[in-house]
Image (cartoon, rainbow, N blue to C red; front, side, top):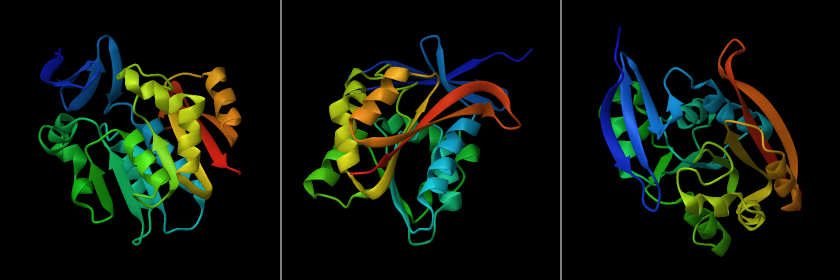
Length: 227
């Protein structure tokens, strides 16, 4: 029987310790007893990009992805984005990118060298603030998967992103008609209410963690800027 092997650990600034495990050809990133992501269950993270871009329509688009993780959302977005598009990725941990370029290089492929990628080692909230104060252009979409849902489980500071104020900042960082999409491992009716209070037209979808309608049920909220 194959054993799960610890590959490396990553200390998140003002947060918890992440662990990268291998299990045969598969990898998983774990926080305590919680498996945050795995190469065996990537479909819902890919759907975060696919379904967001479906709702945006024709490009080119400038999108912000909060959290690189294992790159599932980024690679799905790059497969769909036009040549003139830009995918800005905010990843708080350099170690996560080291894992992508090291033990998970086969999974990563060429996505980190794609000319449409602008990778930033920073808090996604900082880039949202930059778009609001004019330091950078606004976004057509903001895709958030920096925790296991709309709470600061990995990093307490992430709670501000999911607050009514934080969601309002995300809305203001969007172009007219833009979309904020948020991935979660579980439903959260209070979060849907906060999105509406922040001025979004909200749609909630349930997706499976694996294709062919298999695996755990995950939730994605889509908030369209309507004012």
